Length: 407
Ligand SMILES: Nc1ncnc2c1ncn2[C@@H]1O[C@H](COP(=O)(O)OP(=O)(O)OP(=O)(O)O)[C@@H](O)[C@H]1O
Ligand SMILES: [Mg+2]
Image (cartoon, rainbow, N blue to C red; front, side):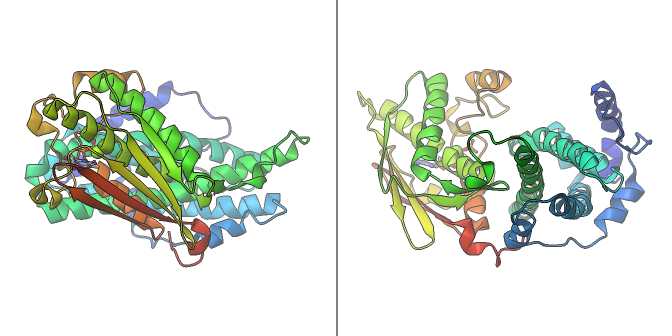
């Protein structure tokens, strides 16, 4: 039986949820609330049209005119449904039992819902309708925001039903395509926002000063690291009732052209690992105080380097082979987590919207490496067993890869 057949009843639920949402005036939705398999396959059979960041940036070339915005939306509107349909179909090829996992089924439904919303928009020929589309796109991004922790939870629960290579290939493809979808979608939403801001009478900072669509051209790694470390400290405090301190040194005035949400994602994962390891090693060694975590920024030719140095006991040679594998974590072994892979505190924190798990999904490192590599960067770990880890992150300034990198 195809996986989609098992997921059909869930469509009724999402349709009901949609009915609860405020209607958008003049939006042309598909009138059929059922799973429209034929349409999904039809879209999925089309070729995607890879685009370089450089091409996306051409839409934002000053002056930002209605024609630029309409060109940008035309590409976005034709491209995203094809990419979303391909994702929906990719779930059909999962083993049946994996598809019945509620977390995986949920993500499947979210992708179908996203496809359904976007393909059914009539072609956009005015700035007013473009704004509606842009809003829908923004809402869509919000709906898909928890795809990664949800899918991570799903694969954690059913990793025994799929060969490692198959699982890795599926997840890598899902994440890569998700990065592409988000970059294209967010780039358009940001352009649309900037266009509207410029129509208003001058109000202080020009958004175009540092932003080119979703790319921040003067992102400060030092201040991003401080923000992320602060957030992780709060998570750590909540989870363990104690937290190490941190400091940032090196080329703290350096800036980079990058997408802030990517930077934040990668570094939060690395910091969570460093904070967790430090606290747990302190406990196991009966260390009276936690050594601080050192975050060093270095400037290179066209890239920024970040080294996160902790004294959390390091990673054993044996474990080192597994740390970049999806769904591999030492969190489950220590009995601190529930069967769902999360501690009670973490579940509470997630319900209150103040963060995900500090560890346990086994997605942090492989995903951080995938994200770092997406724009030509890298992620490496050097471990001194019994002492701590040095994690080296290298991020290329997006300016340097605008023409080569196809999304
Ligand atoms: N700085 C570090 N010091 C010691 N061990 C580490 C460090 N970073 C990662 N590890 C080990 O690598 C494993 C995998 O890390 P990863 O971030 O991928 O997953 P996780 O932290 O267990 O779960 P999550 O997906 O929630 O981050 C961890 O469980 C931990 O055992
Ligand atoms: Mg982690």
